Length: 474
Image (cartoon, rainbow, N blue to C red; front, side, top):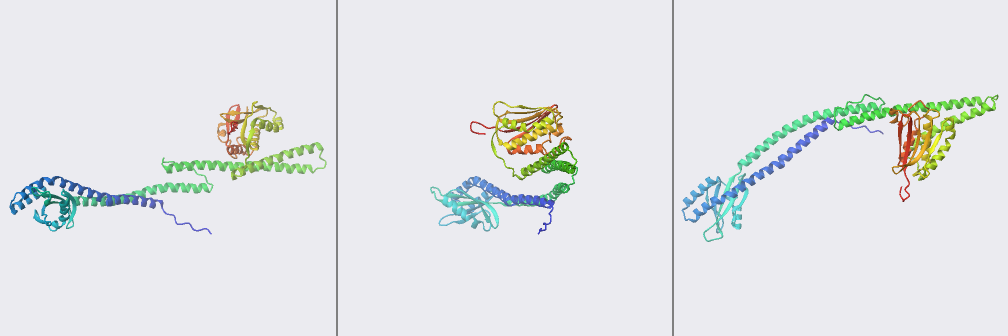
């Protein structure tokens, strides 16, 4: 049971959604990874700046703390340092535990938030800096340990705190702009992607419609190749395919007509001869002539049937080949001898130009003989009576070559490009147009090739096959 096909989905909608998803992914990466990284980098930059300049102010505080000044004077100096450093300054006294003794602004919760960093600076004896949260706000803090004269152990810890509100405001602004830009970009991507996809879909639909018409056997005018992109190349390939299909279809029609004619003529002739042979008053000489003509018609039928059978085997991949070392010179003499009657009827000469040295090839002997028969029959069929035909063998560029040439009128240029096509017949000579096509297929399957060289007054078909290498390889 044939299952129903799922409903078709518009390629325009799919591509628009793809564009939308890609843009959304890009802005998501920016929003969730790039922007937080930017905030982290800015905060680290502020902490580094604070850590770099606090030693200058800490020296002033160290002088005030160790000079024996009154608390009010020290507190005033702490406020002055806070104003100069643009930071909130908190002074902790260490023994026996940290407690705050001076503060420039007394921000709620700041002293508690500064204690961990102060403990760290007290334990290491070095300036420590970090980003801390105070009442939900991000701050940059730097803790500087100060010791009394003649002591190494820190006695005071000065913590400098700067608000990072401007960093948060900047990052917040960037986030807002990214959201706005992302929304606009997504809208543009959705609309633009849909428009582009619709244009692509129209071109694809045009190809689909044209393909359906060709599939129905209705060849159309070539589609316009209006771009050099992949769809333009596909359109060009489709046009080339349509030309090839039209050519094959015409060749098929011609072949059917030729095959029908080839079959009808001998069958009608045989039927007529049978009726004539039933005449009891027919003399023996006429009867013998009729039998000879009947044999000729039967040979025509056999040749057509064998050609069609060979072609079907080649297409089905069931053609069996038996490669062996074959002397092409010897094979050429044998096949040429078979054509003695045909050459006599053609009132011509068949010349053999074969070297004294063997020309050996790795091939199927019977299939090479078949190719040679096709070439000789083709030469006699398509040249005027009395035209000499030459068969030669030689080595060409390391390959074994067998050539059948004639001095006929040559093959016209338009036909020269198509002589190896199936069903193609170049002139009014009778034939199915299968011989040369079969010859080329056989040559290809024996790892060889067959080529045509034609000029006015000379035509030569050359079969090249792998030569036998007496050094041990072929």
